[in-house]
Amino acid sequence: MTPVTEALPAVKLTDRINRIEPSATMAVVAEADKLRAQGIDVVDFGAGEPHFATPQHIKDAAIAAIQGNFTKYTAVGGTPELRDAVVHRHAVDFDSDYRREESIASVGGKHALFNAIQVLVDHGDEVILPVPYWVSFKDIVRYAGGECVLLQSDEAQGFRVTSDMIERLITPRTKLIILNSPSNPSGAVMSPEDLTEVVRLATRRGIWVISDECYVYLNYTGKRFSVGALREYRERMVIVGSLSKTYAMTGWRLGYALAPAPIVSAMQKLQSQSTSNPTSIVQKAAVAALKGSQQCVADMRAEYIQLRDHVVNGLRSIPGVKCTLPEGAFYAYPNVSSFFGRGGLKSAADVAGRLLREVHLATVPGEGFGTSDHIRVSYATSMAELNRGLDRMRKFLGAL
Image 1: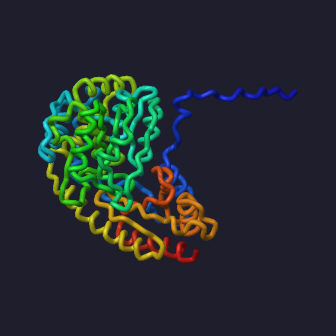
Image 2 (image 1 turned 120 degrees about the horizontal axis):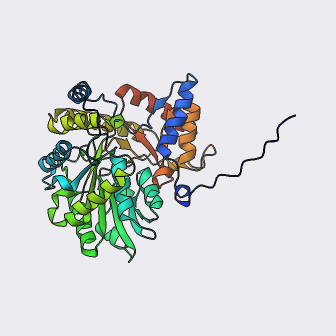
Image 3 (image 1 turned 135 degrees about the vertical axis):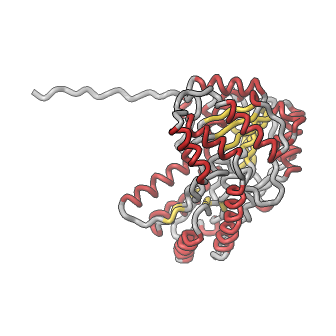
């Protein structure tokens, strides 16, 4: 007799998990990987990570940690040695003045950002978020129960964000402003003057600022700056940093935050109930990165500038493509809206989707970053790959 199988009831998930969407960038990576698994040659402009290998002295420190059996639990927020190294590196490079108890190490910059938002944002709080924004900002805020108030930046002025633009959006419910300079996805860099005015405004109005500085060392303006230099306003600021982009350590997963001690303490409490400490071995590698020679950072930055200039010139040479000059990070954010209405294209998602399916070029559609007129192009790859990808894009768009 065939056993009777009863249909399982639908799984009811929590409201908080249903508020958020999967990462748009990870979706592109997954689709590109599917094509590669079929033997298709994909040019990848979607990856948000350096193409460089992790510098050898950092790898050597990790190997030494393994051989030295540094493989046990550490303090939740990182070893004293690592936290001191974070504080020292930031002080040397940006004239900040944080103490060990005002620092915390985490499992990547995204983890530090997640923890900071969870301890600062409550249900109904408003968070001002400039557009375009990094894909995870909006969803992390929504997971915390907050509401994003989107600020449209000025593309004609390089996606500029000013304190006057922000002040117009402040309400009694505004709890937090999120800044990201240099920006993912646009590569825009806020001037020291604009950053200072935003922080002053926030402090005056009793609002928190989270400054995502994951790309702070990839600033090509010659005016490298961190809000950590604004010591008199530190009681309303959280700085989030990462070793991923600076030292080509994306897979190592080591980030940090600098903030007032009560905020760091709250973040540690949350981290103690989720991941506990970052990997012990990676912490030793991070110390080597922060305390060792910084020539590797300068060398990578110099090459990124060459790659940026090449890809922007290539994009601008395609009729119909407009592209502002990114002043930091390793992304270009071309406007492809002139192609809407041609060949059935209606949005950036259509453009990115067909680039991937028809000419096997991976880019990220702007919808994931809050705009529908752009695609994100990562130029963290070789010059040869940039040329191959630009040729494919020129071929596809030129045929419309």
